[in-house]
Image (cartoon, rainbow, N blue to C red):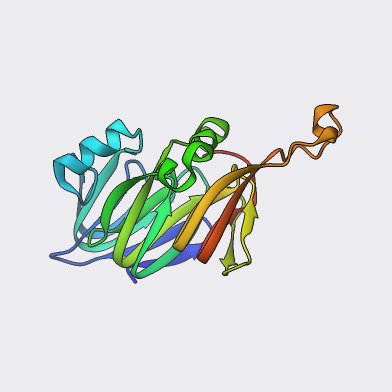
Length: 216
């Protein structure tokens, strides 16, 4: 794993010659050694066509390529940082949540509506998150940001997990998602909890939830 947690809001990455990392532009806090930082025109793995697809999907957070030999410290906006290790599986994550990740991971974009139909489209409108989400697949590590820290909730067959859409950060595994409504007579007269929409995740996997409803 190239990332080591320094504290709850900073990680340190080991940069090895011949390998590369990607990070959000402006996320570098300090570094030691002979390390270079260059804007990533293609936005990570996937080439020019992948970049075009992400821009059309509005899932193209500006990235920089990190190469050389040394160590780099990353953090951004004082947000909490959580490191997720991938072992051949896929992570589904909102693009603006990505702090840094292994250059060996294959980056792509998935249309959330394909998992949730019309409700997936509603999710994008209600939460302010896009109808598309970024995917990272392969073997490597990802440093993800959130407000107020993280909790990992297991998703098991016949035991779906319901998450406030604003608190959703990412998920992994064989998981389906849909937006469900909890609007009843209490909401109609203004006496409800305010949790009118819930993101339901079912299947087998893990969902990462932040301890806040704030956007980054």
